[in-house]
Image (cartoon, one colour):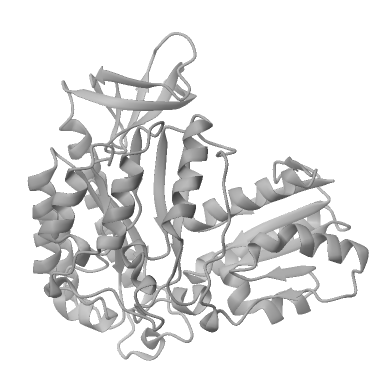
Length: 447
């Protein structure tokens, strides 16, 4: 049978989609592109914003239109929030929630034998305490591989649905992580990307049965469980690079930064979610750090690493955001000088505290503020990339791409800058150190 997959959302979703593909391949399925005819379509959904909800529905409807007789499987975060609606409107045959994706082959087998049986495989995620083990042997679509080390979040930021869709923090045992990394390395993977819903909370559930929140930045807490895991991965042969996924600003203590700086394989690119540069807005968001504490973390990273890429997320137009608060955010982003900023317009989500906060910002004003931040990001991206001109950069090449009519090899530097090179032969999955000679539009380089 032919199975097609479409992924929406975060790196964790990407990892889980790849793992589900692998599970079906092991069962004898032929995995085909989503645009091709298939017998089974699996859409791994996202619910982080209203736009993500809409895209999830659109892709499910697209699958049904491509083959009305196919089995349509909706999986993931949007399913946790809208399973009844999805199953009722006739588009979806099977709803699979989080912590149940590893059961995809047996669920499909049961459905194909008895289509009238249970179609709802969405757990009460609030009470899930076990990490769902899924193993990835090799990336199917790239030379770099995501490695998921934890699931769930205990933070409950006032705007975020993810704790409701993903449940509480559940960490993967270190030996299981190491086993997967070893397999990936043996299969030729040279860079792994450490991923999770809330990576900074890794291992906190090992020390208590009760949900623990990641300590505030002011508490000077170093997550030894995460640091120990990174040290073990760093010592493994085969893997050349370790890239960290999104981290909380508060984890960047002196000890933690010294610890990761001592791991030579860790890439100098750090994604620290900011969301706002206004202390008043951060309090309404329940983000549990101040702009000053965030800046301290960035300072420590820049002292420990040579010109690291600091990337972030910012929400434009959060509930109650005044012109003064937005100006503080803009000034802070300009001062930190991020290598890349993901800008999101605030999206109200039911069940979150921000849904009912007063002084909601009009959509037009959100768009204006978002545009200003994106324009700043365009300047910052090019300035950061330009800082490497004339210098050597280490590049892991992945594929070819056409740039201005020329076919070039495309890869990523340790700082995650896209770099092109007119090298001869097959450079896929090769690491080369080259001099960056030209700045391309969008903050990319040619070496």
